[in-house]
Each structure stands twice: as structure tokens, then as C-alpha cells.
Image (cartoon, rainbow, N blue to C red):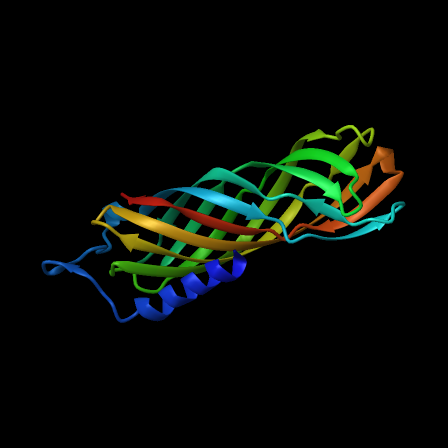
Length: 212
């Protein structure tokens, strides 16, 4: 899944630059002051790429993937430069590689990326971005195997590749891949077991975009 998604986006980048598209004499995505915003709705798959160091238990922490809806907003400072705020939340089942059930937790990772759009007036509009986020953990359910579990909130770092494929001057189809880098400290059973967990999820998204 990861390799296929990256290959598709890489191919899009290679093809996009020489392919401007015009509606009459006007580019399909001509930049104007009144059209500085894009709102997108995506279905995203969040696939943790976890690594952990556990004290008090001979095991590694694991996290299941999740598929959820996501909404984001992009503001354009110019044709090429935009800032995107990403909003989504997901429930992840947690466990260990030895089969211990660590329950589940809700994760909220608002992320702000600064983007560069390579072909802003074309039908294919690839972009790359990087930014910062902050991951919140809530509604922790320890499950049946342990008494309690706590995750520390913290900063995340983001890298992004994506593209919009224009349908008309307002609507587009969007495909997007993000990689988040995030480390959390986990306390189990009041600190009897502790873990330093790098979740580092891949996020694959597909959806629609509307420019206004």
C-alpha cells in the first residue's frame, strides 16, 4: 500500500509540469483574490509505522490502522504558496507483539503544513508540504488485560505529497500522502510498565476539493 501510493504520486509529479490546461484562453485554476481558499473532504487511512522501547515488559507496542473521514482547509498566499490545516480524529486499537491487549485510544492530530504548488494553473496540480502538528490522546480504554493506560500528548512533524486534478474552475479530485513523525510516552498500570513509542504513521487520502 505504501509503495503503491508513493509510486502513483511520483508518476503524477513527473507528468504534471508540462501539462497546463486551459478553458478557452483562461487557465482552469487561474489565481484570483476571491479564490484563495480550498476546502477538501477526504477518506484517509492512517497506518502507524510504530517502534517502541518498553520497560517492565518483554514486548513491543503495536497500533492498528484506521480509516476515517478528514477535512482540511488551504489558504493561498500566492499562486504557488499555501498553508493547509488538517483536521481528523481516529480510534486505534493498541496491543503488543506478544498478544497483550492494551485497549484502544482516540487520537486527534491537528496539523498545519506549508505547501508549494508546482503547477497552480493546470489541470494536474501537484504539491509538496511540510509542517508541524500536535497530537492529543483522549478516551483511553485500557481493555481487559490491564488496569489503566496513559499517553502523553506531544508535537508531531509532517511531510506531504499530493495532487489536485481539476474538473472545472472550482472542483477537483484530490490524492494525498502524509508522513507524521511523533513520539509518545506511555504509562501502563500507574507506571509499573512504561514505553517510549514512535507511532510515525503514514496517512493515505483520497477525496474532493472545492476552491472558493
